[in-house]
Amino acid sequence: MQYKIFFTRSAVKMLEKIDFPIQKLIKIKLDILAKDFNALENNLKQLKGEKNIYRLRVADYRVIFEKKDSGLIILVIRIGHRKEVYLDF
Image 1 (cartoon, rainbow, N blue to C red):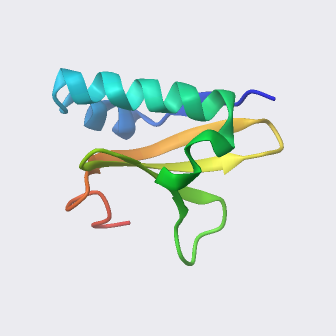
Image 2 (tube, helix red, strand yellow):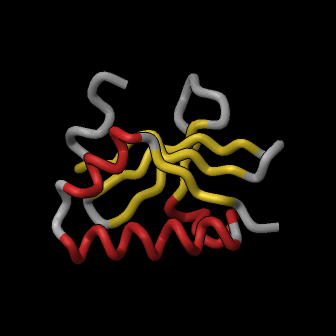
C-alpha cells in the first residue's frame, strides 16, 4: 500500500526557498513516508484540533501534510523552518 505525494503550489514555492541539501533530505523522507507510513512514526505527529493533518520533522524543518486514506494520497500543504511553519495555520 503506497501513498502518492502531491504538493500545493505554495508548498512547492516554500520548498524551492530551502537550501538544496535540506530539500533533498525532505524529498527522501517523503519517499520513505509514501512507501511505509509507519516507518517514520518517531518523526510524525498529528496536529491538535485537526483531523488527518500531520507534521513530519526533518532536521529543523517541518512538513505539514494531509493524509487521505480513501485515495492513498499525501497532500503537502506547507514546508518551512520550525519557528515559522506554524504561523498563520
